[in-house]
Amino acid sequence: MNGCYLKFYVAENRRHRHLLAYEWLLQEAQRLGLPGGSAFRALAGFGRHGRLHEEHFIELAGDLPVEVGFVLTEAEADRFLAHLRGQGLNLFYLRVPVLAGFVDDAKSTMG
Image (cartoon, rainbow, N blue to C red; front, side, top):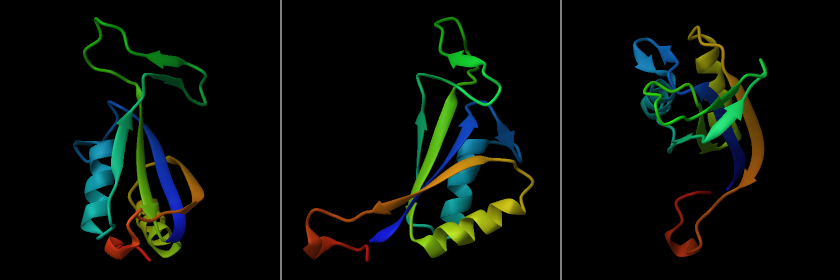
């Protein structure tokens, strides 16, 4: 499948509509029928404000970056981004071309 990898970066403790932002993104993608998504918590990172975020043993509520990623067709990515634009949540995203599939083509459900 030729498509794209659409990923968003959110702070671990950021909320939207009473949910953690990364949970909300995954739920919205599932509700819209997208084929799947994953959230990955960073060890450390910094963003546009230049403040370093990293985990310390005594911290309970973290503000580490979380990457939420989806492998989508271009049309699915367009539809998802259009939906998100109307939700009142300002998100940084990357959209990268990708070639995706399964090693065993006989079982492939993509493309």
